[in-house]
Image (cartoon, rainbow, N blue to C red):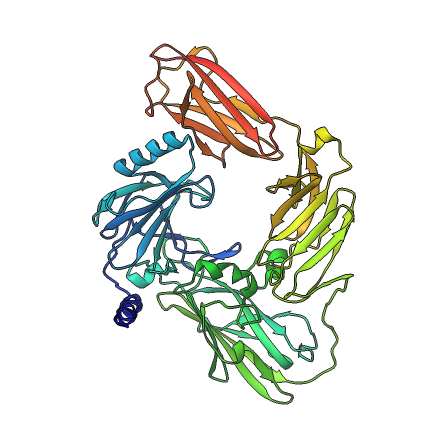
Length: 561
């Protein structure tokens, strides 16, 4: 019993500690003015942004310092995503994360490089012991960069709570100058019940906004009836940057009564993909603008919604008028208001709901198996957010699996029967998704007998693709049988235009060398400072393998003093 009481007290202390957010504990991780290219909670592809993207003056190599005492708990080097990332745990229960780095501090960098050579791999993940890399506040821990899936030099900085949930760093006193009000791009009204209508339409209606003298907006009067909801496309700009970042808080009211609030303070990684349920996914895919729906639909458990009356919907009755207000704020409290006058009126529907019916109607709470031609598709239960019709067709080696206008929460399985292919050809096949240019994008494909299969969370057009072409290998800063004494690095361009590069391995004089792979530029780089090599003739060998097993070998001799 005493153990249970102790655990309850301990848990209570952790929860209490997380509620009392320390605003003077963490210092800035870099010693330059903080200007953002992305902020916390920003709407991204399939996820909410989990930190601050801090601009680094368009360059790499800016020193980065520990914002508080702690120890390095995790180090990860990957080709994509966060690239070179560092994780630090702090005594107060929080953790900080630093991503897209150029390199780590000297002691950490040496440790990483040693592990890379031992494992003979550029990519790795390490979990040092708590006492291995202790850091003090203000200690150099790394340098900013552009590694991984970064779109340009910057530091991605996170603060996570004791449950590894990312929190808005601005809550901790990380100050970002911001005197600008959020910008509103568009507002939509959604008829939601069977009898609902807006301006005699049962389809979403884009409202015309009129800018007022006080910089608020007023929508033109709408006539409506039934259960309706609203959505807004909005962004914010902080001082010193033109980037269109996310907002901090949105609140709505109907006749002064609070209806809905979304607040970007904290979320969990387990829920982040529900962003696709929160936004108008169809509109985003067709117009590249994310509309945040200010009502909670079924299968939307997002914790960022922390205030709602009737899930944010309003019920409009005939002959009654009302006013709906949207209040959009940034973290500094700069606010813009949108007022929408509503006249309740049940009228003749001139534009009935657009509902394209097909042969395939899927229930969201059930697993669905569909076979057409040589393709089979399995969509697990609770992958779809609601029951829906799908347009599925097969023509030869091409599967048209609806359009990417409906979000999937879980991975579906696509299987293709390749029994009609020659044995030699089967080894070079993969299932690819066609992009907007009609070019196949490689999906990780598994083969079992005469069946190929992939997992994917994207509807669209899929095709069987044969790749019989070897990767290409081209030296950049050296030539065969030449002296390169002044070179600090070896650079080699590798490319595979169809299935893509799967792996590579390089040696000099038969010994493994570490080559960093920049997939955005298709360049491998070896640093001569890594290892002492012969002072005369050196033999380089590089083998590159693509995703279906085609391999290419490059060999060259260079001389160095």
